[in-house]
Amino acid sequence: MDGPDFDLVVAGAGGGLVAALRAAELGANVLVVDADEHFQRGNNTSMCTAMIPAAGTRWQQAAGVADSPDRFLDDIDRKTAGTADRRLARALAEAGAPLVTWLADAQGLDLELVTDFRYPGHSADRCHTIPGRHGSRLLRHLVERARAHPRIELIAPMALREVRTTDGRVTGVEIATPDGNTEHVTAPAVLLATNGFGADSDLVHRWIPEIAEAHYHGGQFSRGDALRIGRDLGADSAFLDAYQGHAALSSRSQTLIGWATVVHGGVIVDNTGRRFAPETTGYSEFAAILAARPGSSGWIVIDEHIEALCSVFDDFRTVAESGSLVRADTAAELAERIGVPADALEDELAAAQRAAVGTEPDRQGRTDARHPLTSPYIAIAITPALFHTQGGLVVDEHARVLADGSPIPGLYASGGAAIGISGHGAGGYLAGNGLITALGLAFLAAEHVSSAVTA
Image 1 (spheres, rainbow, N blue to C red):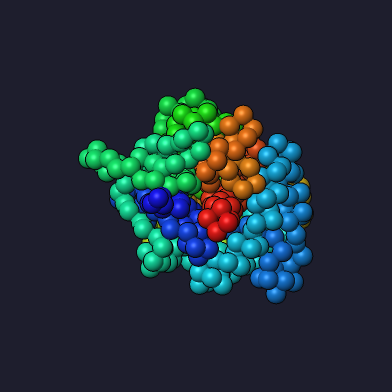
Image 2 (tube, rainbow, N blue to C red):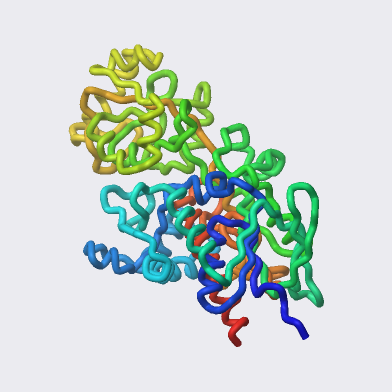
């Protein structure tokens, strides 16, 4: 009897490529399909800052950073107020170190530990990234590796339409070209890595109305396909109100400025020239706070010292090159150039400077040690954005999709297609939560699939 066409079908050529590469390395034949012809510049992996949180790695050891999966798990619990799926959070906290080690050693990825600043919520330096700190470089590397592997076939544009089962087990898929031509492929395992539903306005309005009117800055093919396919098979879903927002998207260039601007000491004012919340709240939840301000917009104010620190990010350099940085020698001059009341901005920047050097409490309750802003000043117009949803199909520690609490044999989900580890809403999001669920769940799925292939 002939065997299946492939051992694994991966729908989504973002983080799903990790599953393809790991499974192929372990002996599986893999088909990867993606509905987006331009996925290398249009999916969420390509648009991220390439921050992979991992605890207990050799990069941390070399830098003298004390960390462990348990400590990472404690940070997740603290940020989500204990609402995250603990089994999944533990699995990803433990998978982080093997994942980044494999990416470096088996896939040749040039990884480094971020030690120049720390995102809110992480109690240790554990974000690993690549030079340039941009997802497009990460994705380009994974695509090149996948296309060079003899066991991997990558087709785009090609969309997954249906997962087929027999007696409750996955047996294959129906895939389709943009013009509607369909093909049936047999396979005992499918990974749904099609992201969440951020590009579907109706679903966003239904599940996360607080951010529904904000700019969506994510893949345009993130339309909830995994939810639809999974539910057709009776799969469970959860945390559909969870999402990653961002309050540091450049209004002019529609490019991520980066929260490092704030962590290094930048402050955010609205169109009245006033600060309105502690910036250390976190960039995800700050997006909804900014969206509620007059005009649903504001300004990040930094100085040349912070500009230099943030220039290690490709995205920040892109924002600078777009002409989005407004410069001024004094607070009054800056206020005039960005159109806010001068007395308000002068007062806020002076108070923020005094708080940063410790001569008075911060007006918004900010307590971090930070660089005190000094003239000349730089302002960047910002708009709140939805980056990606963080809820989806319920999965276990092997990334297996569950129905009534039990695995659907052969069906897996990762990234935005699956539940994440951010709890509910926007407040539980830790930097890198999106990428660790995309890459980490794909890695775990591949190992589970391959154990069946080689059994």
